[in-house]
Length: 119
Image (cartoon, rainbow, N blue to C red; front, side):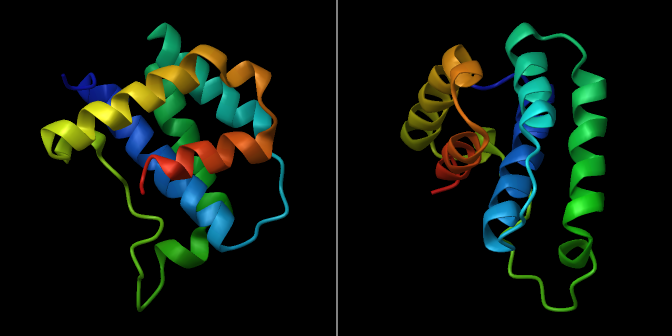
């Protein structure tokens, strides 16, 4: 099983962004933005807008990471479709579970759950 290629690209950026938010200890609440992106993926609607939103979020909040002379890779895009079969299946199941209930979660929990997809 593979994610739709557009979903994989958006999710890859979103995971990298969330890793950066935690690493940089950013004191921001972007619940509405993250929820919009997840809703777009869930509904397979507004995917271009969701992609543009995550690109802008990374530019706005992680600009230091984008220009770092010694990048650590923490905020890199994390493509689930590139994982080995068994690991990919587990990540897709975890992501699909998150997609069914993300509206019930607070911002911090959402960020942490999205980061877990990269572990």
